[in-house]
Image (cartoon, rainbow, N blue to C red; front, side, top):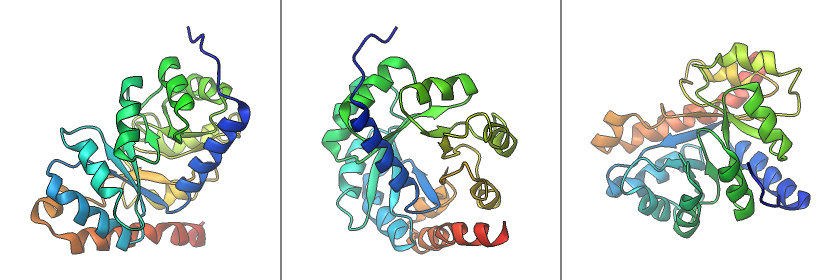
Length: 228
């Protein structure tokens, strides 16, 4: 049971406001795995040039923290840490320069540590009970994960009325083809996806392709609104 004192409501509100701001800087947050540190800076430069400034670097590789530190220095980049699953990772991502954190799920100790850190936090949830538990802590902006596995568009439509206070960043299985429909929903702030950094292009150092895909993704918000 979580017995730690919750952060002041004003602090949580400020964090939530920053999460909302970050989630609306662009319609897509690239979910990035960096295996080769030499690719970190040119990848960030290509994504930012294409109009996607908010970058989620997952803690799934040995060089992830170093990649965050390097990418955070790229002009225009707003770099955060993804796959934060333990409280003891928070100090490390802060030291690396992460400006936000994303988790695939949430549990009381992680939520408390994240809120105490003051770093904007986007926790994952997959069920209404998990979403309500986060909402009870003042967290209105959440990641639906794994989005397409837990119902995707139908899930979000079903949640819109009973959990109308929550806005989501669906992540997991979202593609360039399905993203516009996700973005047309009123309870979706943005989507997370890895299609803008395809592995063949990254391995080949084809940053022109990454920039092109980022540019197409950055235009999705406008096209989805026009088509809705």
